[in-house]
Length: 166
Image 1: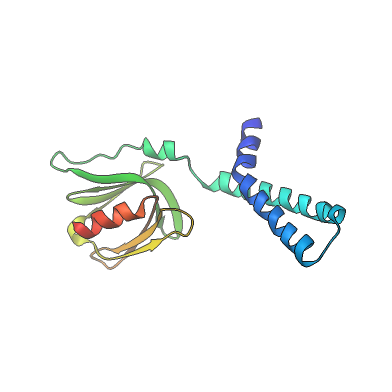
Image 2: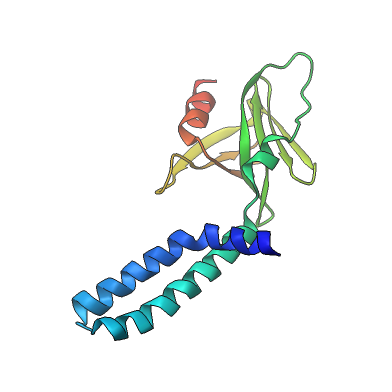
């Protein structure tokens, strides 16, 4: 229990600081509130923001170390080009796992060991969307049945380079 509380606080700390700074800007600079009243309002808001965002982040994200340990079975004749932890949109749900691109196929294996495979020659219409906050982002592909496949990765530029070159 103590470990979970520490994880929630560490994951939400930055959100709490942002909420406190936002309250500061609104209270002191714009509304000209006295410092005592400002602290009475902003500290509870910052604490609630920290706990709520930390709990959401802790509940819905998976540790990268766990995802990196997922083993993807490849054929003997395949060469791995790039692989990394990723999220995949499956039937409206985001599933964490590991994404692997070989010279023949694109493979995704979820944390629950469910494996999805697409022949590289069947994939087309690649669109890449960068994230605002880091080097990651998401990309979409279409398979031969024109179904849209969406993946979220940390190093989007590397995936874009590899997918467009091959």
